[in-house]
Length: 408
Image (cartoon, rainbow, N blue to C red; front, side):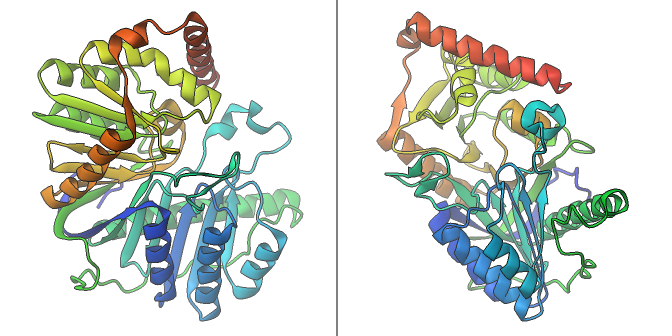
């Protein structure tokens, strides 16, 4: 299957994983059961209690002869503790920090192109994809211990799309190897950031139904990737197509929400033709640019009849959607310019009423219990100081995109 394909294929088993508790247990179990190969990419790998569970399972797998490949983003994961770097090396885990910031940090626009996807394939048989970092639900690197868990999702998948996920992971690792070899020619071994090793061959795969897997069976699904080469707008196009085809309801939960003009217009047109459009967005202040930069687009959406609910129980980190009770997506991509224009992202898209019902039920419950619904009139009358900060952040975001050579 080409990596750009968005045609859904039947024959998948899909399990919805709610929060880090579900995700880490399923991930560690799969790694501990691995026989041939584990490939894992993540934006944040925090070596807290939850992260160390995953790290230890990777080390155990490598010690018993499993080929283990780990890639962490160099901004989300700025450093690997020395004792874990040594443990990874001694056990045989092959690991790499992708594009760590140099002397000028994020002042260089090329440094904004991050590895943001959270993707894992075990033995070429089981894949994990979603928004959950290797980070404890009750901990945030900037805020420390949290009072409430982070609200997020992932999916565990068996079936045809696992091959596409595996191919994506292998291709990216291969590019990193080429880059590493070029750096060795230029700098020698002074810039060593990983352990050199040949890629393992593609393991034998089985896509037969596993009765113990759980979740939904015979789901039509596909993997949609975003990168800066062949798949520049694939995830946004997939969202727009689903929104354009909606007849009754659109439910979206997104952590950092600043859609471009085409996506905003798609939501507005859907609301105006009678589709109920409900957004569950971040209600807590986390980052200045993401929090304030999104607010200038709220007014036009509210005026068109789009419902906006701000999640108040804790930090919302989900990037999911359900359309007409059948189409659903779970992934790493926010609906903002950083995800849609700059970062490497991965979403799983499904057409299955049972899976969509489970995800939708969680989202509607979060809206009704923990959401604060914005009132269009009250929003229009918010204080001038609030509007100034919103416009300042919105303008700053557009300037950064201009410097990065992107229009939005």
